[in-house]
Amino acid sequence: PVDRPEKFPASCVALGTDPDPGRVALAREAGFFATTEATDLESEAARLTDGRGANGVLVCAAAKTAAPLATATAVARERATVVIVGDV
Image 1 (tube, rainbow, N blue to C red):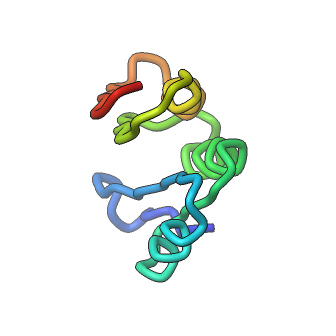
Image 2 (spheres, rainbow, N blue to C red):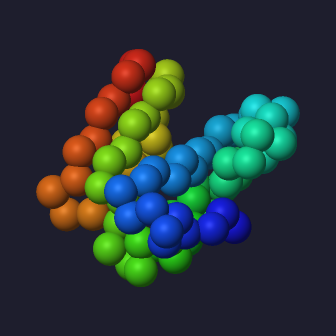
C-alpha cells in the first residue's frame, strides 16, 4: 500500500490498474500503487480515503466492456469528477 500524504492534505496519490502485469510492475517500481485486479484498487482507494472515495478518477482505456467505467464509479466519491479518455 502507498502512504497517505497527511503532511500535504492538498496533495495527490495516484493509483492504477492494468490487465498487463508488465505495466503494473513498471508502475510499482516508480512508487505507485498498481494492480491487475479492480477489487484491489477499490480496497486501496477506500483505505486511503477512509471510505469516502476518490475526488477525481481518470480512465485511460480502450475496452469492449464497461468494466473500466464500473471500476471508476466504484472508487469515486459522490459528486467526484470522472474523466474518460479512450473508447470505453
